[in-house]
Length: 323
Image (cartoon, rainbow, N blue to C red; front, side, top):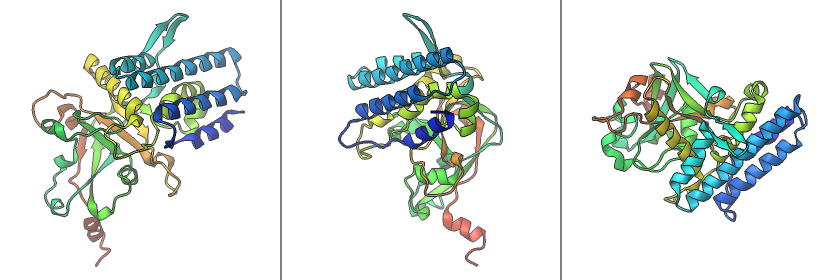
């Protein structure tokens, strides 16, 4: 099996559909076992020793992910977090130091003037009252409204954005356009995020070993929710632990080298539309100053400038389609 063949197999694995018979823990274990099996079938490498080291690192990561899920199921959240933290930052094992996975190529820089979008459901009476601030993260003084989401836990506000309006629409589970409003977010100063996206073909070819090692974290973060109405969603476990690490990382640094959030590929990615691959790239950005006074995180307020919200019928009229 060569690089291209391996890439095509992995792309077909995601997003990961859950099974009503096998619980989440088993789904992740099976998908990671399959991943390791495919890697063992790969034989198009230039340096066999380097490839053995890559396989060894992948095995350690997969074992860590499975152990973190087990600890969470046992109610040992702190132990689960410590396991993921070690995988990201590195740790010492019986055989020597193990490199962390969070830095270098796994960090993506969002440049100034980049554009993203945010969509939210509305009631008809809200169309004339919503302001730009209403499209930002849930206010700090209204934490009780923050529910569990893939990359955030109840009570901790997080700003979710998408690279495209289409991406927002998929994330919102395809609402009727007359029931939503959209704002455009323009980046005012560059910032960095942990890159948890499915690697592009170019990145796969140019950073092959690194992509291979990091891919188990992508896989375990792209499990579709089995029961959307459940209060606790185990499919969010690994993504939320990654966000917790981001928050802890930022609190320790308190510098411009912070990782503001996570860039990820939507689990709702599909082939229904012929849009570019990156149209379902999303951002999850937890507030950086959760204890600050006021309504919104000052740090994030300085990073983004957003437009007043608009809606479909208004844009139709602006384009003159009904005249």
